[in-house]
Image (cartoon, rainbow, N blue to C red; front, side, top):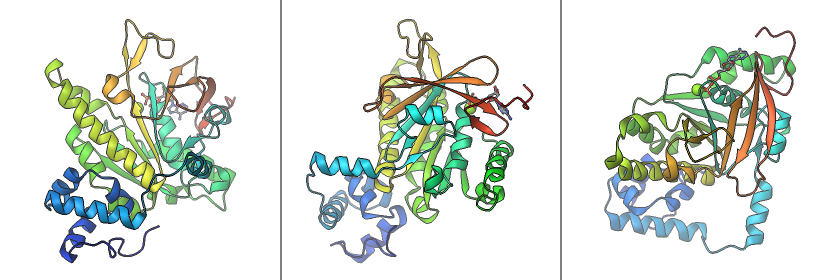
Amino acid sequence: MENEDPFSELNIPKIVKQKLAKKFSSLATLSRAPAQEISEQVGISLKLAKTSITSARTILKQIPITAMDLLEEYKKKRKLTTGSQNLDEILAGGISTGSITEIIGEYASGKSQLTFQLCVNAQLPYELGGLEGSVYFIDTEGTFSAKRVFEIAYAKSQENPDLIIPEKILENIHIGRAYNAEHQMNLIQESDNFIVEKKIKLIIIDSIAAHFRTEYIGKDSLAARAQALMRHAAILYRFADSYDLVVITTNQVLASVDKYIGGQGTEPALGFAWGHRPQTRIFLRKQKGNARIARIIDSPELPESEAVFYISNNGIEDKYSLDEDL
Ligand SMILES: Nc1ncnc2c1ncn2[C@@H]1O[C@H](COP(=O)(O)OP(=O)(O)O)[C@@H](O)[C@H]1O
Ligand SMILES: [Mg+2]
């Protein structure tokens, strides 16, 4: 992905390059970061941070590109399969790399189950709908279940015994347990080198909202919460864009008196400040038994549409298998 020393060509003192390398792993992420953030993170002056950005942009030749170039880039984007063809179909092939996708739903709607399935699927070869990469899972509520992921990985390995070894799948899922909102943001902010080193192709935050909702309470803290969330989102997007990886966040729903997103009288938590950051939002509704309905909302390029899938012992599937006990 990157050469040994991505900063060798930068027109800045060697000591600054060394400091940058401790926090950044590529010219792409460096060139996209705000100077203030680089200055704070790396411990260099604002002026040096700006010089570093300018130099990185020059090397990368960041000049305006045409819409045609963007279309070509879009066509190169990979899609990560969800495990359900129905759901993949309404997502135009799966979850897109290079952007943030949010899974929204009430308790037990299947948000975490879907992320567990994606942890396995991300490691599959491209021809099977995978990203051939590993996973960084930020667990904010302590709900990550290694046992459940193993079950899902095991089921996948039965389909492709030569290709998929469940133990290997689990070894390539790196868990960061976030104990508060600041910790959650730090885990992401500090992960540039880690992402490159471990070949991360999927970042999951399950859930984005829990800590922010319990720590920033009352009207007075709304502005501070919005600011923190913006920064969090900006860094997530920078990774998605620079390394062409999938970012998944999960979000809770709140009862709403005047909004009917998903037709349930509920709306995603964190309000407007966060709401426009994910490029695609998938709203999950629990149905009878293990059936779930997924609805695409807010996507700039997908129509609003719904798909049914099932949560079985094997993970996310299109059909309810009769041998499962409910
Ligand atoms: N092994 C399994 N087989 C079938 N369904 C399961 C299994 N494990 C969990 N589930 C289903 O997943 C639901 C919990 O989903 P989860 O993703 O944890 O919800 P949340 O949206 O709160 O994250 C349970 O209600 C159960 O129906
Ligand atoms: Mg959950």
